[in-house]
Length: 640
Image (cartoon, rainbow, N blue to C red; front, side, top):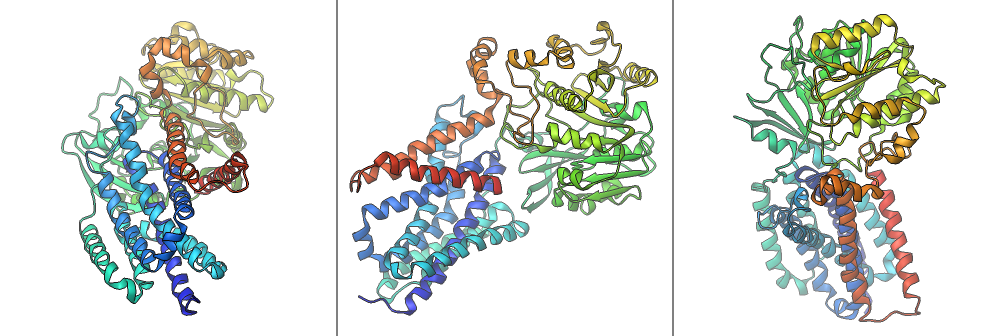
């Protein structure tokens, strides 16, 4: 029967709105999982979305005739069910019986099933929405150009819509708001024949959506995330929340919250309580109370004060300035021109508005100028020279479990250090502080990056240009544009003696000076340093159990240290149960890939055997479409 000419118009608008909601929901789901777990699950969300569309295509292939016969009822019904699923899945996934924690995946077998359940739960909104879209395509195949245009236009608009919602609503509030759109899409294509049957589902969806908007689900953040640990402190509470595309910003206050990484053992004053700023549940930085004219600043008693101990620093560049701790230190040390670079506009907004009273409007200080731009972009554009360039602290107290193994960190590549080197004045230095970890990895990679960058500049004796001092928990490296003078070397030693720090790298350093004040769990650390400073460092790269070669712009994974061939040796020394926690982020993605592969085989490939394969070449067909999917994932992940 010939379709009514006006029908495709209604369906074009409907399919466009449905596409808006699907993409917006996908992006918000990625942020929610980044908050309650970690950023790795962006991969999972995109995979689940594609899986939903793939399974819908297979379902249409298997039951095409039956679905088309009932299309008039099914299309609006599927859209409305898609809205119901969007409103319900977050609350269901956060229920205690279903919630998984990726930290427990390798120690509690039940978590694996909870993860699979989470896949399937998030699968349904995409499957239902894709089924409605596919059914419209089949029903109005002669209008496929218009419909496909509406689908693509709606998908693009969905990305913009998600960004807009993220600025104005908290993440847990957004899915219910988005779920209104599929319901409206379904109502738009209701026919008189289907109205009676579908009306009940419309009523259920509206009740659920209104309830979800009025009572958004509580996001249960992993107990192992920094935010959860901070909220366990005495009288800890969240003072303020602000959402943005950069992430959910939360300010936590507690009388027990302190910040002074690697603080000198000679510090005798009371440590001031600080507020903590968290982004998606991860530690972003402290807000240390400070007033203009304060003579003492707690950070001057940390290893990070090393560059100021050997010379005055008039022009200072602070990259990824965050909450401004390094800016405050530069002000307290008398710097006259301080440039802070911070890509996260939400952080800058917090520091200039809600938190400005704590730091005496430090971001508006006469000597401070702040640029809201990526640090690498700034380095590529800037032509100024600086007496000091500081980088954000690397790592966390006690080390990490490798959750950031797949996070791109372009500020810590060999290429980035070369850019910084070119921006130094004649007496300028680059300073980077790193938490000590065990087994030691990050400090060694920082050093290897510095040494290889110097080698690229034709410098054959790197120890003349590098200084490093170590406390009980941190190590600070400085890289000088010209060789450290004898006077500066003595100033480093004097700084260490005053603060009870130990020099780790310094020209003319004696072995007995390595650990006078702060003992190490593994004294081989100093041997590794010597090897990295020598021309034979390639041997250490080959023999060390972890990959400590410099990260590059082509491989910007500074926190990725796994060497698969070293797994037997690591298991021998640390036990099989400890292995996953060295590089958990990497293993989670691998695990997610294999689970998605199995689920895809069951939901997409297996059902096709019931209808048979036309033309043979099964493997070629599978590999062809698998290749398209993998390529799509590479492009989408990079762009996101």
